[in-house]
Structures are given as C-alpha cells and as structure tokens.
Amino acid sequence: MKTLTTILTLLLLPLGTIQTTLRREACDTITCAPPSAAHILVSRASTEPQGTGVLGLIAEGIAAACPGSNIVANPYPALLSPYVESETEGLNNLTQMALSYSSCCPPATSGRMVFLGYSQGAQVTADFLCGRSEFGFPDTDGYAAVVADDVAAVVLMGDPSFVKDLPWDRGDASNESYFPRLNNEGCIPVAEKMISYCDAGDYFCDNGTSADALSIHEAYVWKYGVEVVAYVVAQIGSCGIFGTGVW
Image 1: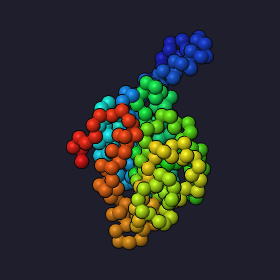
Image 2: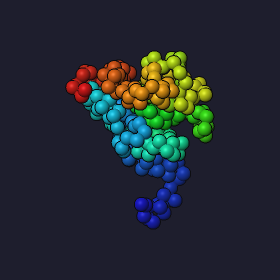
Image 3: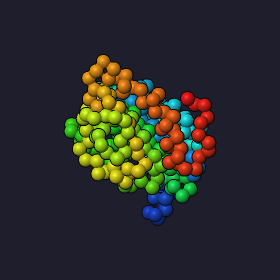
Image 4: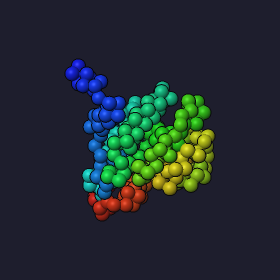
C-alpha cells in the first residue's frame, strides 16, 4: 500500500512521469523471460486443482529445453458449474496476465509468450486470442492482433469451442463441439503459431457419445505431448536441445 508521502509525491509530478512510475511499479511484479526462453501461460482443464494441471508436463518439457522460461498458471476456478462464470473469470485473468507481460516485456529484449490450454482452459485461451462468439457466452473482442508479435506458440487441447477444418486444427474430429466458435476471424493474426487438437469421439470438442468419450478427451498430453513440446521449442526458435527426460 502506498503511504501518504508517496501519494503526495506522485501528485507533484508531471502526468507523463506519474504514468511511467505507475507502469514501472506494475512491471515490478512481472518476471520477463530471457530472449532465448519463453513465458508460458497455462490454463488448466475443468475440475483440475489450482496450478498447471496435466499441462504442467508439457510446460516443464518446454522449460527444460529452453532454460530461463517462466511457467505461470491461470488461477481461475475451472468449474463445470457454473461454467460460463468460471470461463469468464479465466478469460479475465488471462487477459490481464498476457497484456501485462506484453506491456512490460517487449520481444526485442524478452522471451515471447507460449499459451497452453486444455478443455475449459483451451476455450479461455482461444477466447482471449480470437474473441468470444460462442452461443450462450457474452461476446468479447480478441487480442490476437494486439499480442501477435509477443506470441511464440499457442497449443489447445480438447477445446469445447473447437471448429473443424480450420488451418490450425489437429486430430481427426468431424463433429460439432459443445460451444462452437461462431467467428474465427480474430484468430488469424496467430494462425501460423497455433495448433488445436481434437480427436474423433472427444466428449467436449467432437460431441462424442461413446463410453470412452471422456477418456479420449483426457488423453491428449499422453498422446501428443512429445510432439507438442517439439513444436513449441521449434516455434521459440532459440532454445536448447529438445529431449530432457521429462516424459
């Protein structure tokens, strides 16, 4: 908390100096990754406890290959009910986290951001970048165009807002997801940096109804984890040697 003396001192300064001072104070809480590393923002799946969840394995694999990388978890509720409120809190959190890093850590002198999102966390991540346009959710603007230069890679798994046949899609899904994104134009600025996995029969991203629909939804890290780490490391482009025994 600022003291009265600090506040009075700020009031005597020119506006530009005040803004610079306040920005510096805000940036004091941000750790910028070195240019050869990454700032990894992880939004976990529904019902996982606070932290990075199963995506932590991928984040740790990236960090092991790119020393100096930061791993930051999105501290949102990740609840299935109330889902919209939980997802909205995740979106608000990620917006603040990403824009703060983008403002405080320019890519010329800092590592770029890597976004990892699973299930509800994938929808949170896609909503931040592409804008929210799913039925039943309040519309929001996307920030892909704002942060594109600060982004190294985006990886989504089991996204309930998945839409098939988009350039960044991976997997063999062929059905409509739970909450299909109605407008994907906002994703374009990061299209070449983004991959989104959805396999056939996934309960949430492919509207799967078989007995193993949830098992399919939960299997992406184990099925694609090594591939994803290699992809992200290549996207960062200045990391060390891939393959450090995390898996």
